[in-house]
Length: 314
Image (cartoon, rainbow, N blue to C red):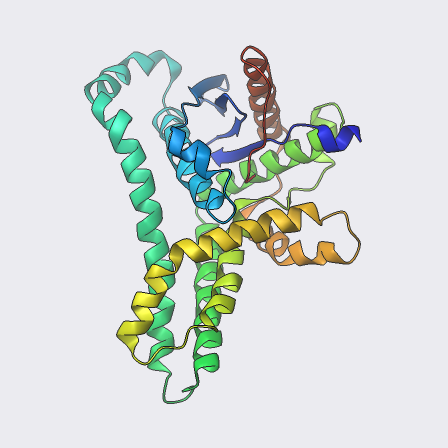
């Protein structure tokens, strides 16, 4: 019973660190190049429309994505600006931040949302055009949808796999694993020591990686009910249905998380967990220390406000 009432938190891997978020604040911790830890906090100021939208099934997922994109971008900017800069030179960063204050207020939010939309359009439409080239060989509506879904999955896996060879991204994936390990340890009710955290899995049912995979699977299912007569009609359908696919995929993600302790139904979340074998790596003890410090700092600051709440994606 105690485990069920435990607050649910989410997080995000950033460059050389981890961000965790609660109801009132989001806190990140990074390891600087002199081996010290640096903290960054962004208090939540959620617009009323997002708060209301997050209570509506099939809409709450989109609202959550918008909020996560905005907050996550701020923490990612902080980490990329400072992880390789000696702390003694921090004063040199300040003027640039002050001169771009308007960008920080408006630009970060706009860039985060537009980047997500642009990436989603490419990820949605490129497989559509490729599948269309094979129409002479696979002319049927069902065959085309399955082929499109297959190309989308190949594109996703290839992108993540190639990205993992970049040293910087590989370390981000390690911090992603550390983030999940901390959440798993916390949800198991164990003390957050490096030994305890490292003993837990780097995979988690609520991970955003699983969400991305579910958009592929759910998209194939939805498209099967909507035949098309031309490439133009097909492209328009895919663009218009992006919010629908995102909304349904989010509900599927939440469902698999609720069913993860049921012996047979827990298998529904296994495809997403399998993808996390690519998007997470085993962290070192020092990386785990950063994740623990970030989570504990978030808990401490949350206590100075009020009660923590659910975070939808880990």
